[in-house]
Length: 280
Image (cartoon, rainbow, N blue to C red; front, top):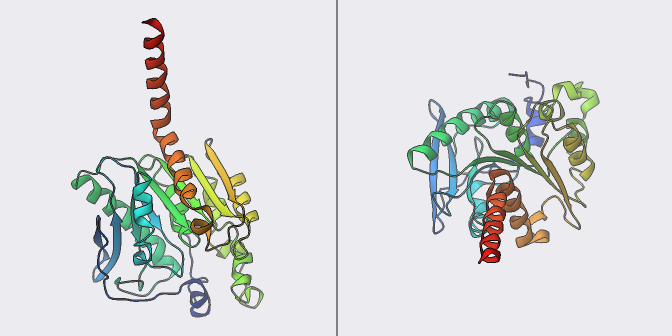
């Protein structure tokens, strides 16, 4: 694994992570909590919003100022669009143990991915598996996608990070004084070049924290042959859903259906039905 020790210095971590610990909240209808031990004594809390055993499953890594419980209203919207959504927290977030840093975020993501795979299989969730990362979560999602192309059907990135230094500067980190360069950063551009699974990139046109040009860089560097890039007009960094409305979820589901072969199957069925009717 890459050395993230410079990012893991206290002054930088305080700008990257905004952990908030809370007591476990009441589960929304149709949801369940999945707690995973990533190392002895460290449990990461995840919340799974369930639509159906056969629905596609999205493992979702959220932004730095969010919690899995913040998705209690959003998760059911994914369900209404026909998708299961499993949101993972980071160390020190929600009811999870420990203190977050970049190194353990990525190490934990690897454990979480494997354990969630096992949990889904054991509980007979048969839908295709997708990874999604929003903002800081794009770091974990891209990193996993470079290694698990045979297990993941597609990668989705919302408000994703391409270059570390511009973001660090916008967060008030004095990169020159610390000697921080892109080589010491997340290296999402270098990593996404190795991503070959279908990729869907969403970004807000008015995102000032991570400008839409970063999404363009991710799209241009992505190694996938099947990739889509959508900018939501008027959307800011934290208003993607409120600006996009249900179209936001429908667009994601269209990408998932296309990658899963559902749209092609429906077209073939419709063509067959029309041929049969014409021959009668």
